[in-house]
Image (tube, rainbow, N blue to C red):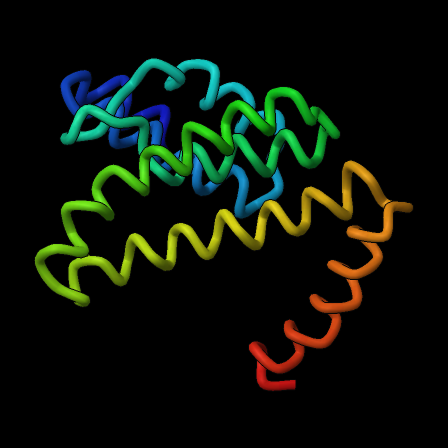
Length: 142
């Protein structure tokens, strides 16, 4: 249990909280997710950045709450957290850049979903839903 890890290993608390945030959003425990995000909002990973998973979790919570303003702020931070290391990684190798490209793709997918959530009747949202309804079955092998 993450709370036990936080209590027992104070120096590693940020790692436990990051894992707890991920578990909470995967389980749909929005109350826990909100609590862990609040507590860990100023924590950084080993590189001095907010863990990417915390950004994704916060974006999902904003979508659920239909909080467009906060969503846009967090999306900007999440993109920055990926683009900065991607610039360096792209000079080194594809293997090093690939995980960062996948993170950008995840943010793109979330942003397409946000269009459908925040402006459901707009033409852009209708087109996004139509495109996703074609792409997702292909990705999932259905």
